[in-house]
Length: 81
Image (cartoon, rainbow, N blue to C red; front, side, top):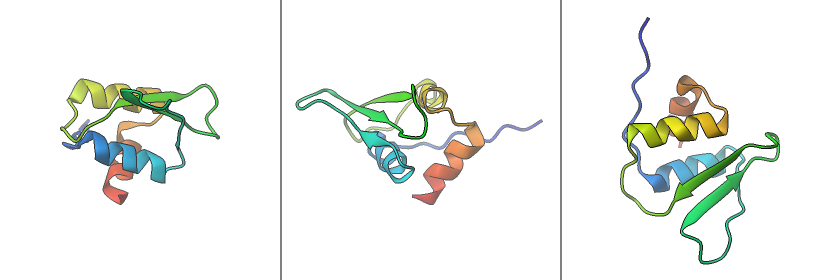
């Protein structure tokens, strides 16, 4: 059983991809993090720090878990944007 490898992706690219997938930025002004909620996924919330540095694999895995994605659907989402 092979696993799809996680892409090397920046915080900015993940933020852009999540917004394109319907997530809404509900961050407070002057916050250190983006807070994203999805209208069709109640109770799900993704917290993502600002910046353009690449994300580590544990952080990407946590975003996948927070968003209710599978690894395959998350990679497809990143590839679309």
